[in-house]
Amino acid sequence: MTRIGFGIDVGGSGVKGARVDLDTGEFIGERIKILTPKPATPDAVADTILQIVRAAEWEGPVGITIPSVVHGQRALTAANIDPTWVDTDVQELFTRHLGDREISVINDADAAGIAEVMFGDEQSRSGAVIFLTFGTGIGSAFLVNGTLFPNTEIGHLIIDGIEAEHFASSAVKEREELGYGKWAKRVTAVLREYERLFWPDLFVVGGGISRKHEKWVPRLECNTPVIPAQLRNTAGIVGAAMAVEQGLKP
Image (cartoon, rainbow, N blue to C red; front, top):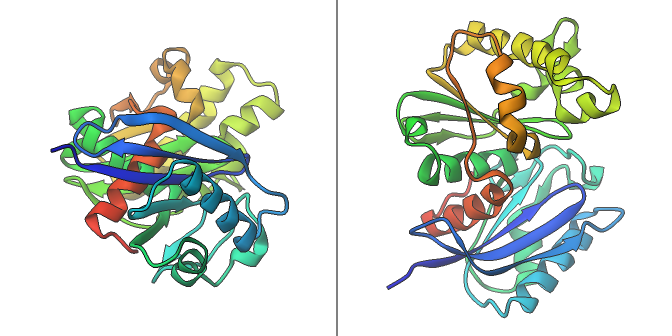
């Protein structure tokens, strides 16, 4: 019998949800997307999630990613969402909107990381792996032999006097109109600092720009192998569905 879950991925521009085949990592049916409300307050986002769940006619458990550190099922930071998320009890919030069902809330990069380990390149399933998403910022997930160490925020580490994500995110590439060569040099500087601090066995790089990995990954000059993520923009939803199925509640 097919194991089916449901995942929601809350982003700065859109809230997306879908049924997920938990044995293959593939979507069942269409992904549903609604623009992220503005302002993206907790109740406004929760109401948007309810709309997606109702549109999907889903009555089971729901996994949810948010762009925040989630510790003890409280949101402790707010990246690209409203500042009122800080210190929000996310279990209380989503139970109030979605009703009495199993709910897991997890950091968005962590969700993408666990999905990539399960359904992406098999190299990511062993050893010390750092999964990075390059987008508006730089998200991160640390995994050791496939087990998640949650809520790493190494996109905020200081590189050459500036936060890594303010120096080498894909948003910075676009804003400063950097070519792939110049941008890859910045990403290299970031990865070398991560190497110096954490000594990983592998970097897995994701985010929308990983679709064009052939233009920049071969230009990176670090000692640790770097491979592109396989799931790309489905990873957050898949990881959210996995989180609730596994009972993950960081």
